[in-house]
Image (cartoon, rainbow, N blue to C red; front, side):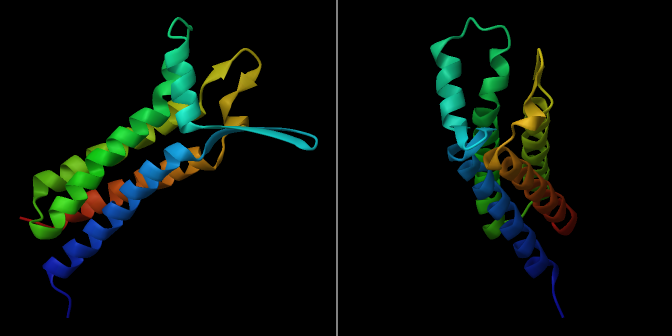
Length: 149
């Protein structure tokens, strides 16, 4: 028979995996453009570097979303690692909020439209993995909050 402690540990592991996926997503392609046999990709780090290169752009905030995902994932990683030793309801809520923040950052990035270019048509693997990481953070955080005192 499983106890609340082992279930809480499983949810901590889910949150930890989600946080790691979110952190790794910044080094993968967030934008992929394919024209016939030519493919160009921009990683999350490339987008953040481009944003810092020209802060005067009108919609530069969209380029910072991979950085927001990475920072929120680091917050979730710390919370998930700490919840292995002593799961607390507040830590579960913190992890859940990190996951929600990751999903909001992904939605802001994915729904951006500039002129005739829609970002949703150009999304790469890193952007999708950020969403998966956010969902796993949310599931792990809710589970930790529900099973802890």
